[in-house]
Image 1 (cartoon, one colour):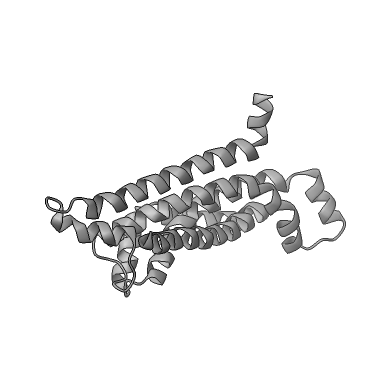
Image 2 (cartoon, one colour):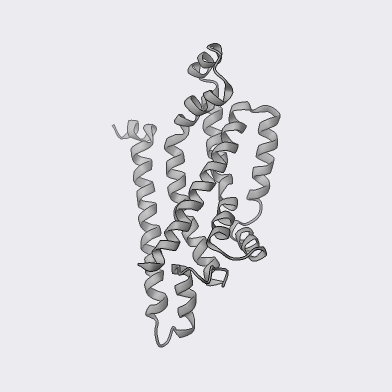
Amino acid sequence: MHGARVSLRVGLFSALFAGLIGTLVGSVSGYYAGWVDDVLMRITEAFQTVPSFLTALMIVALFKPTVTTIIVAISIVSWPAVARLVRAEALRVRGSDFVAACVTFGMSDVRIILTQVLPNCLAPLIVMVSVMIASAILIEAGLSFLGLNDPSQLSWGTMIATGRDALRSAWYMSTIPGIAILVTVLGINLVSDGLNDALNPNLNQRQS
């Protein structure tokens, strides 16, 4: 229960910051298209070519391994997926009649993105962020298992790493936090599936 505080904090804040970065990049890229889209997508693809866990490991290893550093590292490796998702939705929406009407009325690009483009990206974005929380928890556990953890903070990954030297005599030291990670990640994935079913209008139409 004590270790859940750090693991869940890392998962929530990493997903939040990655969602903000990815939403900003994806919305600007999809709305303006052209050379802006090309530049931002090349940067996004550059981040995606490197394995996310290895990149997070390198960032945490270069700096002092604190909870803040781990959150920043996970956010940096997680935002490209959000950016591509939001970009696809922004490209779809930018040609809509209601966006053209907003341009005709003289609305600024920032206001159009915030009030017209992003609300239409909200449903898939919520599902994506919920999945990223589970992924961030697993990455944090992996980093802690390798010793790249905040020594002043106790997380599930730290507990597993501490108990690995006593697996024969005290197997529960690693098993219980491992089960906690399994149950949490599985629960978050089930919630994301439920959100996808509830927020996906195309799926609802097929079911009806």
